[in-house]
Length: 332
Length: 280
Image (cartoon, rainbow over the protein chains, first blue to last red):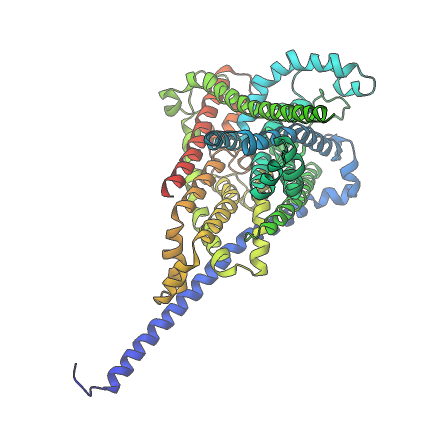
């Protein structure tokens, strides 16, 4: 290295090179930033698009029938008289039945996996339950139609009719033809479908309970059941409800499993054994052949209703689960 | 008196524990029942013919599922090609750039909701913007519908995995003068590689089994076709049609196809979990 070689032209050239590189990098950074931003916006754009397109296509029907559409009981394609009540009723009732069955089962499974199960068995059993979530919904539909419904008609429906069906008042729910398929069957299949989702949320939430709390309870002599009831549940209340809402959101939107076993009849009936229809299965069955006009836009109105209801339910679920995460100080 | 209370508490505990074990057993029974029925009814439909012949017409004998399998593979592959870059880059935005901003918070909220949104509504949406515009069903419409379902999954898992990467890694890269885009893409993403792969596999598993979004977009095709611009045969819709039909060979093919899909999906799920565990 030659002493005194402070050659200013070399320095300037180096500076120039460095500046060029930095400017290219800044441009690259800018482009990358904007690229990722655009892609991140796709989700929001999709959401806005869905709501907009549903609304625009549903408008003729909403304009014709007004908001009373959702309380109107008719669905007459020939006469052009449409109402969403039957489909909404089916959707809500099947989802409710599914929740009534799935929530206690999920609770039992979560308690088992977090408190009772030996440690070495926890992972395999946990994975097994999550595999239930992975099974495509059409499989549940086929299982329901070909395997479960016949068994249901042969053994369970007569049993229900013989016991609960004899109670005056309540008995109406279990009356009528026992074909297997119907609202009750659809509710049961849905229950098995949403079971793994509720279970996984409950498990996550149960595991967040600080061990100190549980061990203090065990230390003063509480039984496992008392710990679950008095320590774990109150602590995870919000999370548990959030998980239930998540299951509800899924149950409301489920198409294939319900379409196979609900019977697809546009009639309102008091009996749980009777066939009915849900919003999603009405769409699946009738959209393919709907002609542009009132039928077409009534289907879109149903789709809009379903999307908005599901959005609200899932939004509440997400909000509740976010509150649980906040309690942990975990970045949400 | 104390003894009686204690006995009652013990009894309540035993009942509770037994009930939870019964619940677990019911869950396991459900899983094994479904899987064994699939094996039982579908296994004898799985033969070379299923992969060679196209779907039979109504009433005709034999046939296979070749066109449906091919169509499903095509749509899944294209969907993955579309949703992977979009999902990963969007996840990079949420994790590296947006983070606390309002846009990021809203996007996370909406993504989580779209994860569980009814897939038939997505099908309706793609029908409106694609099929109704060009006036015919197509494999591309089906691909777009599947991508709209897959992107939230990839986005969410990518963001979560990227957040797990310690910030010291980023800071070290910055200290060496790496531009931010390179840090995100080459350093952080590579560190979270296995987690992101898991997310991709789970997304693929999810869309392979989806039927409802394909009902009004890709529709179905009775013949073997490689034209993505026309209705495309696909496994879930074929299973749906064949299962609900009165023909026995159609029902058998439906069970065979169901077995195929289920074990492919379960295989992907298990692969994703094993893959993730290995890298730890």
